[in-house]
Structures are given as C-alpha cells and as structure tokens.
Length: 486
Image (tube, rainbow, N blue to C red; front, top):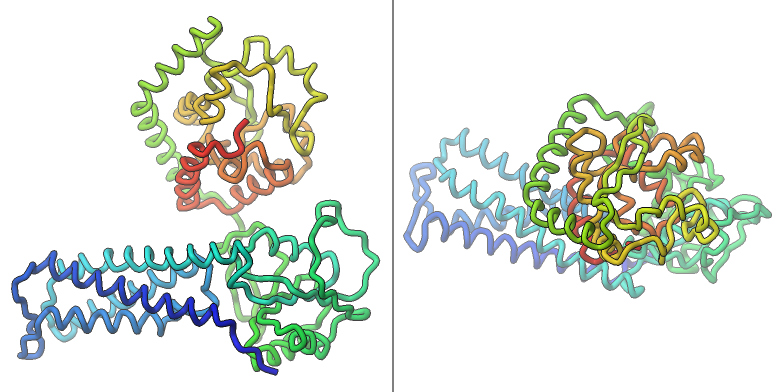
C-alpha cells in the first residue's frame, strides 16, 4: 500500500522555495545598497579580496539551502504559523551564529553593519512571504480545497469530539472522510449530537484492528490518520500501525486527550525507550507578575493621556443626554474573589438596575449565568453606539492603574454570577480580570457560557506576554469591526 502525497502539497512546498528565494534576494540586494551603495567593496579572506556582492550571493544560497536542511519547509509545518515561523527564525539565528563564530576563528573582518542589516531584514521578509503563502492556503481550505483525506479512529464519543474539532477548524487542513470505530450504544453529549458525520462509517466490531485500519486507509486513499485518545489499541498495536503507515507515507496524528494546554507547557521526554509527554504546571511567578503589572501601568497611563480628549467628549455627551451621572460604578469580582467597583461610562438609564428583574425572562445569554439582551430597552441612544465600539469601557484604565484590573485578562464577573459557578470555574479568578481578553476577541456576547469559560481558563492556564500582545492587537480589529457587540 502506498499513498502518493496530494499535488497541492508539492505546489505549496514549491511556492515556499520561490518565496524564500525572492525574500533572500531582496534582503541581500537592499543590504548591499544600504551598506555600500553603488561603490565597489571587497572582503579580505585568507589573503584574497572577495567582492561583497559575491559574499551576498554565497550567503543567500547558503541561507536558502539551510532553511530546507533545518526542516523549515517540512510538510508537517504546512498551515501552522507559529511552528513554521519559529523554525524559520531559529534556522536563521543558528546560521548567523555559525557565521559569527567562523569569522572570529578565521579572522575574517566582515562588516558588522552588513550583518546587522541583513539579519532582521531577512527574517522580516521571510516571515512576510511565508505569511502570504499561508494566507492563500487558508483561503483555499476554507472552501474545501487543499485538504488531506483523513481517517479518524477511536471509540464513538472521542471520535465525534474529534470530528467536531476538525469541522470547526478547516484551516487545519484535515478533511475527515471516514471514521473507524467500534460499535457502541453510548449516548452522545448534547453539544456533540449535531456533529456532521462522514458518509464512510466503518464498523470495527468490538475494537479496531491494525489490519482493519490499514485496509480502510487503502480503500479510502487516506493521507492522514488521526487516532483519538479513546482508541482501544495497545502500545504494541500502535507501534505496528505506525510502521504500516510510514511505509505508505501516511501521517499519523495521536490525540493525547489534553485540551486547552498551550504548546510551551508540553514537553516530550524519553523514559526507558518510551516517548512520554510532560505537562508543566501553570504558574504565574513573581517576576512574571511584576512584568505584567509594569505593562499594565505603562499601557493604562499612556492610554489615559492619549485618549483624554475622547474621554472628555464622551463625558459631555453622556451628561447632556439625560443629565444623569457620567460614570457607572458596578461591583465586580476580581482576583482571588476580592470585589471592586468597576468604572464605565454610563450607557443605560439611571434606573437600569431596578428594571433588570422584570427583564430576566428575556435573557438572550446562552447558559443562564450571564445576562444580556440584544435590544435592551434600558440602553440609552449614546450608550448603544458607545457599546458597539467599546467606548463605554475606557474608564476601566483607571481600574488598571489602581491595580484592580489588568489590560488583558478574563471577563470581570458580577458577584451574582460567581455565586452560580461550578467549582472548576473559580480557577478563572486566579488572575486579575481584564479590559479585554480572549473572550472579547473570540465573539464577546455571541459566545455560549461554556465557550466563554473555556477561553478564560485557557488564558489563566497558559498566560504569556506574547499572548497578551496578540490579544491587544486582535482587540483593535474586533472593536473596529464591532464583532459580537450588543
């Protein structure tokens, strides 16, 4: 049995080669012009003089080949931006580090400014080119093209959970065309009952067999096999299956069952010949807390200064509308269950809290813990458009300066909401709530309760400065587009 890789993979890899070559050629031409202009420049090497344009050409060829040797164009990286970018950056830094060592050992006086210009410019153009190619691939996958024919193996509940994930993320490039699972009368959870099942449902008796899985791969021209965490196969059977799949050039993907765990927390370890997965304990150390607090203070102070004219205009609009108070202070629950008064520009009429009880029956929130109405009659005219662009939340920068909130964090809950939490949901209170967070850039009021909790817990368990920076950038896009705002 042998499955030829899909033609789109060859095309994608070829595009990466061309884009890398163009990026490196542009980098070295611009570096040559910026450093030497149109003047002739030579590099003395072992008593000889080598023109810098020839040095640049040799560097470009070596750099391009090194990216391939380091696996920066491997099939496994297709479509995975973080891993692909990390591989490109790492390979480039290793190459330039080796160049620095060799030039020192052999006393080659290479112009430092040449390296200083070429290194960051090359990385920038390489990543930009990769991003363009990846964007084109993602667009094709969203319309069902450039997908890998995928077989999902495991017990029914685990298989259906995997199908749900793959169907919700077509950009991953895995098209589940067949399922191989033992017959089971297990009732599916409600959130899985609506999952679209493939046409090819292959019965596996009481348990799957290696021979049956291999035959299914041959019959349906499978390119990737995904084994759910529930797959009832022994370690020996998995090993034999991996050999068959390797001979057929079929990728094997194993689901560990770990959910909502970011990559940096996962490490592989070899113990007695067994590949084990180690998941590090989430911990926000004191130094990391200090870094986060420093960013909060600097960011909030800068925002208040820059936005002071906007704050003044909004305050005048709120006051002029109905003569009520400008700010609305509401009790919210912060880190470790402490309470504080969260500030907002008032977007509702002064009697909004008194009228809430009569509106509870019209709650549009999914899950029952939160409360919101898409067309809440308590919202004022100015309040409606302020909410669409999140302008009513600008006073919360004062809460950040006071140490009650952070720029990025879980949604600040009401005490009445916290009283309804299940035990595990209290983990979202281990960090300060944020003005923005994963909940805001992923749908805001359009999210179901379970989805909002999952996003908050993911943030708490996997916090990093880079993640905060990405969320802040995505927040700008979300607010401008008015995504999920009511």
